[in-house]
Image (tube, rainbow, N blue to C red):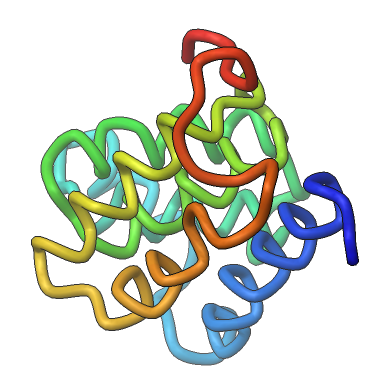
Length: 138
């Protein structure tokens, strides 16, 4: 049976591969960044993902987190799922499985079918789910 690190890495890859068509399906980076700076939550999500994938800009996970967080706070389901994946593996944010679960719950409630599918995995493995002993404060 895989350990939690392997499962979290696989989960993050699943989440990011779902966004695999990102480069070909989204607007150029600079106009999106301008809209993100102006406070557009969808543009903030797109900017964050551009930083994750290095589309139009070099990959930069801390910058990705900087843009995904306000988008997630505004309730953009895709941003909630992407940010949860980062918390699952502690990439650019503290490892915080409990917080990842909460973000996926919010995304599922906001209508994300991806989040609903991923939620089925939460708590399924011994080191997954909610337990404060495995979670650093985000």
